[in-house]
Image (cartoon, rainbow, N blue to C red; front, side, top):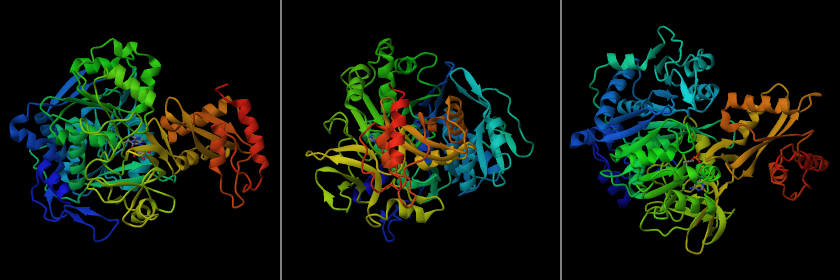
Length: 612
Ligand code: WT7
C-alpha cells in the first residue's frame, strides 16, 4: 500500500492529506485515500497555472475543415471557472448528474472539468450514439442538465444534434436544463426557460470559481458501458483513486516528459480512453496534447499524418482497428509526411495482430519507436497490463506484463491459479482507479465482477494466455460482449433493438472475426408471419439499429432463419450460431430441442456467404 500512497502523494495536490490508504473492510466495496480531500480540476489546471505554466498549450485543437485553435492552461482554467459558475446558476450542485453529449471540440473537456470543479458527476455519452441511447443514459442516471451542441460535423456534412436531442429527450421530466454549444451554426431550436446557449451562460457567469475540495471517494463520473444484458452498466469512478491511476499510468506508460512531449490520443472523449488519456491523465500531468475533431479519411486519408508532422507529435496512441484500416489504404499516405518527431506508439481496445504491430512499428514508427500495447477496461479506469518503455521487452501481440501495483492472474474455470496456458483473467488485489460500483446497482456490481471467485477477486470478463516468460496475451471476451473496432457492444442490447422492429419475431446476435474491425456483428433473424427477408429489409434493420443504438451496432450480416437453435429449456445456443458464422464444423448439437434447425441454417449460410 505504501506504493500507492507514495504515487497519490507525489503526483497529486491534496487539500487535506489522507492518512488511510486502502479501506478494505467491506469487499468488494473498496475505498481509497478516504479521509483525504482534493479537486480534480485544480489538479488538472490551477496547479499548473500557479507554477507559472499558464501559457503552456494544453490542447492544439484541429477542426474538421482545417481550423486550428490552441488552448493554454490559463485559457482552459478561465473557461472552466465560468462554466462551473454557469452550471451552479442553473441549480447544479454537488452530486448532481450532468449529461455531456458533444463532438470532439474543446468544450467537451471544459464541460467535464467544470463538473469536476463543483463536484457534479458527469455522464458523457459518445457523440456517435443515437439520441435514444442518450435518453436512456440520462433517464437511468437522473441527469439534471445536459450539455450538447447545435450540430456536429462529419466528413463535410452537418447533423442537427440539438433538434434530434429535442425530439428524443424533449419530454424527459428529470432533465431540467439543456446547455447548447454553438459549434456549427446549424439551426437549433431553443426552448425558452429550459435551454441556454453555452457562450451566453459563460459570458454572464462570474469568472472566479474556487475549486471545491472533495472527499477522495466523491463520485467523479459515470460512464455507461455494455454488459451481458440489454441494460448498459453505469460504471462509477471516484475522485482520488481515479486521478491517481490516470496520472501515474499516463506518465509511466507513455514515458511522458510534459516539458517537451506533444501527445496525441486519437480516441473519442466519449469512451474511457478519452476520459483517462485525452482529458484527465494528460492535463493532470501538465502535458501538451493534440485534439482532433474529424475522421481519419477527411479531407484525405493522410490527415492524421499531416497533423503529426505539423505539431511534431512525439507520442501517438490509437486502436488496432485504425492501424488495420491504414494498412488497407496503403503506406503512401503516411509516406507523404515527415513522421520523424514520433518516439513512442501505443495501442488500446483489442488484441493487435502481429502483422498490424509490425506495420505500425515499421511504417509509422520508422522502426525506432517502442510500441505499448495497453490492456485495460472502462472498469479499471487506467492501464493495467502494458510494457513500460525502456524496461519491458515487447512481443508483438502481447500486452506483456502488469504495471507496478497491479496484480492480475490467470485461473481455470474452477478458480485454480495457472502459471502458464489459457484461462480466465482476474485481478487479485484492489487498485486505486477501479470502478466503485455500477451506478445505483450495487447488486449487479457484485454479481458481475465479484461473485464467481468471491469478493476479493475481480473477474475481468476476458480470457487470456500466460506464456513461459509471464507475458499476458489477451484472447477476448468470455461474456456476451462483442468488440467492434475496440468498442464494446452487448449482444443483448443489439438483439433487443432488432426485435423492436415490427417485422421481427426473434433475433440472435453473435460475433464473427473480421479483418478490419476485429469482430463484426452477425444477426440471425426470424421474421413474423409470412414476411420474407430481402435486401430492403436488411437495409431497414440496419438503419433501425443505427437509430436505436448507433451506427457502430449495425449488423454486418443478417441471416434469415426460420427457427433458431435452442436448448430444451428454450435458451438460444449462441455457440452454435458462432460456429455457423465462422464457417466452422458444428459443435455438439445433442442438447438441442430440434437438431434439424442447424442443418437448415448451415445450408442457408453456404448460399448467402458474402465472401464467396
Ligand atoms: C475490453 C474493454 C480500455 C479502453 C478501450 C476499451 C478489450 C482493451 C486491449 C488490449 C486486448 C483489449 C478487452 C477488455 N481490450 N484493450 N490492449 N488487448 N484486448 O474499453 O470498452 O471497457 O473494453 O477491451 O476485451 O475487456 P472497454
